Image (cartoon, helix red, strand yellow):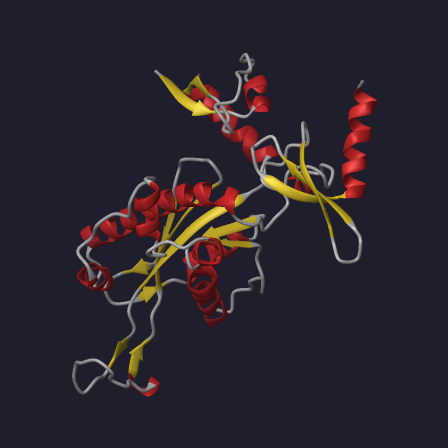
Amino acid sequence: MKLRKRLKPTEASYLGLQVLPKDGDRNPRYYVTLEQWENVLRYREDKDVKVLFYDIETSPALSFVWGAGWGKNIPYDNIIEDWKIICISYSWGDNDKVHRLEWDNDKTTRCDKSLVEEFVKILNQADMIVAHNGDKFDIKKIRTRAVYHNIPMRPMYKSYDTLKKARQHFKFDSNKLDSIAKMLGVGAKLHHTGFQMWADCYYGDEDAMRLMGEYCDMDIIVLRDVYNALRHYSHHNIHRGAILGKPKYSCPHCGEDGELQLIRNECTKAGTIQRIVLGECGHEYKISNAEYMKYLKSKINLI
């Protein structure tokens, strides 16, 4: 049985395949065996930038209240048990495999220490982390539990927040991950039983935990598809080429430093010339005039 996967020219050459022309502005699809695909994933892990997609689910806080209703003020002293992280799903780059960490729940004691400890190690391996509303919610929730458990954690990570990018560069009718995915036709979040699923997970229900895990895993798949759709229309947060040790004129999105197409020249108020170029992946980006001269010189040296 063969798989149909998009490969970069370098990956096709690595497998000994004939390099096919591009499919528009995207890399072409190849038929590969499972063994070949696993070799490509290992090749990417060694050669590519480490982009981490992640999503968390948290438990509700428990508190004493005098009654239900909108606009109720619940003092902090009324809280009898703080929220915790139920699970974290994550995936690396273009790898289809989704991993998951879950809290320790024996129906009487719920602890997320080992989960947080393990995921902080994973975060520290990433060149960039991707989440929807991750800067405001997910990463702060993780850091809060890290400081609670006295687990060392970096104060800053290179982040691509798809919610921030949606608000900054687009005008979707709704900026929810599910809504964006449906509009772009790249998938949808998994339906669930509502708040009852969170309540059942709190009490250690195994079926609820299974559904929660599947729900969180699907968020990763949808998140990656939305990220891939938005990234070429928004500013980059890291420079892939520089991370891979390539010249500054290499593409910050795909990292390639092959053929560049000059789109136009711009001049700043200070009179500095900047070049707008098109990379091999079809993304426009800006480089200095000095870097463009280095690119031209590299091409002359190849002749």
